[in-house]
Image 1 (cartoon, rainbow, N blue to C red):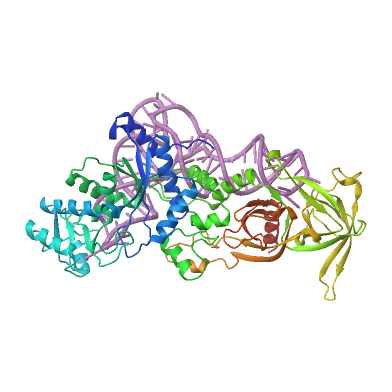
Image 2: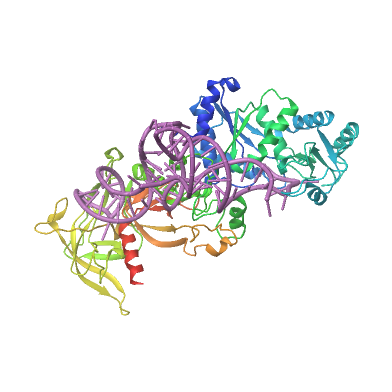
Length: 561
RNA sequence: UGGGGUGUAGCCAAGCGGUAAGGCAACGGACUCUGACUCCGUCAUGCGUAGGUUCGAAUCCUACCACCCCAGCCA
């Protein structure tokens, strides 16, 4: 694998190490909130945090940012851990939860109160909003802002003891209601929520807010560089304020970078959850989802995703990456590592009329054109074969080099055949093709003519039946998220096409779930993680092969109107 | 019209005062028993705009423009 590319964060870290900041240590963390599944955007952050630590001989923690029990649950915690491991990263024994620090957080809050840096506020959320002011007008001080320390302490303890209802009181930092930065206008530190927490059960009915929790958690874990996305930039002064007031021994450095956006998809947990809840997809791991679980099921490899994350870089510029880049990383990895096989997706039977009925030839084909170590497989050749319906055309477009009436084509790894007769049923539908073969063409070029086309095939008698699920992008529009629009309008009605009765070459028997193959001339496929069995194979299309012919044909059709 | 950010090709992105890397896409070609892979070539007198400083500016200065984020007791 190539070396991890440098970026502006690595530059900062190199400088920090040179200046012996944080004693020259590098310690990062990946801090997911367990309120949904991880998606490709998170992969960017995971890769950044873990590889940054690796690059500088440091460590990376996993820490669940679980301060909002209303939205979080333990199922998400498990899924997140599994996804990160699958991606190829390991946090060893450094698995933390913000909720692990609730006691400490509470003590520090009392300290803040004692120091006159925080107060208990009785404003309702609605009133607080009014007092906060607007982007252009300063806020007003809460009537409780000058409440005596002893009283604040008592009220805060009563909040903790469960004496009040949700929203009745909050603990606020005493900073500056005039600040042009809204985050500094006496932000809420603790709120009352009578809610069972997936980690702490019913121990607490007050929960700390992100801004208060995150910086302290970082400091307690000895994090040196706290990497987060751009929208937290305005929170940095608050991050620093909290740590400065508390005088904790370490003061991590928050550095923001741009989150990942990819065209033709949505990338917010809210919208992804909606797709799941509205039944527009089969679940968080639907192969069309940009979730890591979905991509895994689709057949993506961890290294393709990691390579992609390296390729897109890390900057502070908002951007939208072309999904073609992701697919490029995918094909690049799959091409190298996937064994080849033949599978006929839309079977059309052909009979080699001049081939004996009882004859079977066992052909040996390499599993990979460039990697002989992957070995060979055996493929039976007989009189009756399936080819793909799309590989035969009675009225071929210009440039068509597959099978046509009276024309020749190479059967991959076998003979050159000629289509002698098209057989139809009473409705005029083609039912089979009668062909002849040139016995001298196995492993040899035909004499005196050129045969350009090569098509794949499977012996009728030996074929394995399979279900193949053809996936395409979930959205038709480059930016389904566009402002003022509803992404539902852009859902691609043809994002899933299920093909039954597909024919696999017999070497594919006993396929295991998650096995990946390139079906020659079609694309990369994976045996479905959940639905596939050796008895009833189910394959998912991961990504098609690049198809310059198909593209050129599309353009021809567009021109023709 | 407050504050914080960002502008380099269709997309991503190097560049850090010495004369615009690389990748994706696209296009043209070579090779090919996968219309794949691979290989070769083309693709920014130009770096949001306008001025200025300098022998020299994408890099420094000034002004302007565009876009993104912030008014949750979400993260």
